[in-house]
Length: 61
View 1 (cartoon, helix red, strand yellow):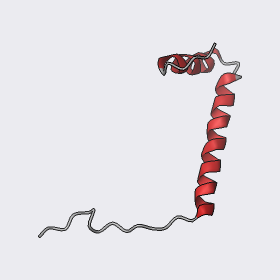
View 2 (tube, rainbow, N blue to C red):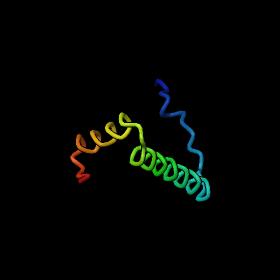
View 3 (cartoon, rainbow, N blue to C red):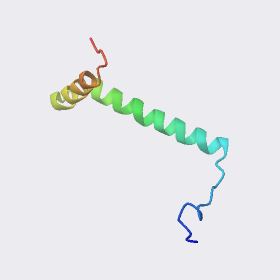
C-alpha cells in the first residue's frame, strides 16, 4: 500500500480572530485597488480597470 501526500496532510485549526484579520486585510487591499484604479490620473491604469470591468460583463456606466 502506498502512502500519498493526502494521507499525511495535517489540518491546523484557524481561529476566528485569524480569519477576521485575513478578511479585513483582503477587503482593505481590494478597496484600495479599486480606489486607486477609479481615481487614478494615469490614463493607462484607469483604462485597464475600465476594460476589465467590461470584459467581465460588469456595467460601469
